[in-house]
Image (cartoon, rainbow, N blue to C red; front, top):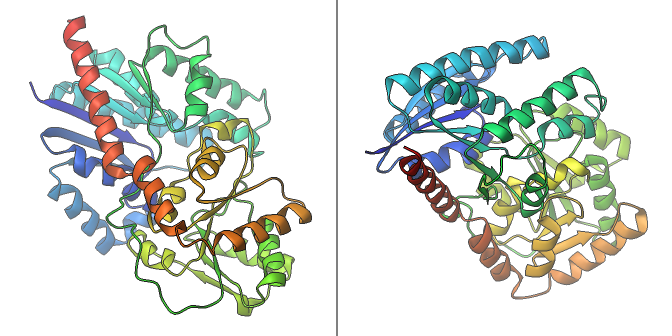
Length: 401
């Protein structure tokens, strides 16, 4: 009997994240499997008809059956509840109609839909939890700890841990934490699979003309992203390298970034901001000398594995990171592929800049970065790990039956 998988993502396939962290995997996983994909697409993305049709063709070419639903945002709790209801109904229908064997649910909201399908049909549930979602919202200041929404989300977490047949986390730090939760059903396997990068695309390019260092920021600018601290680091770097540039690649928060630049008094002649599609990102990373993956440390970030880390390293670009984010500091220090900041005071930022400039003179640095990416963040390795999880779950299904 073939492996029939239903994959549920609350992120849309029309978004860069959906393309890099869902589609890139599923295209490879679809070989020899039947995969149905439920995703939630944002209305503004759906309106871009040419992009929508390109993604639809890409999904169809992989042999994946795509079932897009509309994402609802406001009011937050009722909108999410509505999405869960429609996603659950579709998941149950697909599981029954296509005799699905595994529901692979990406993160908590999708997990509830997967749990509904399991309860209705007996399908096995893979909970790809990504991080500690409820705690992330508290640590970001969006919810008060102990708030009704927080308590509801933690109860959701307990139900998912009890109901899952296999759990995937992004980091070893998170896996250790989850293993200690009383709500985890005894014997439930936990597998660590970090966010991976397509290293055929994110690869070193021939060096361009020698010039001043280019500090690179890539991705979402949110409460987690420490944009003000990044701008302070750039200002201090300019004391050592007066022509050092900052290249910011961001899709949706450019107004916020501009306000941070104004508040920091950044020199506009030293900063470039670009809005790019995911396909353009490797070429933009090729212009960077240093990649930054700073993130505000907190309990919830034990489960974080920044996608950009594998993309920078795959391109041979060293990274500036900080402690308290998943396994990031340990990887960077052990592999000698960047600098880990000890703090965000002026002295720590200046010391970090000096260490980074010294590291850039190491002729083996780019090779070490690429080797680290191949060992830890290769998409092929990630796909192989998911294939192993699928096989173990189907084998367990056979034993149980």
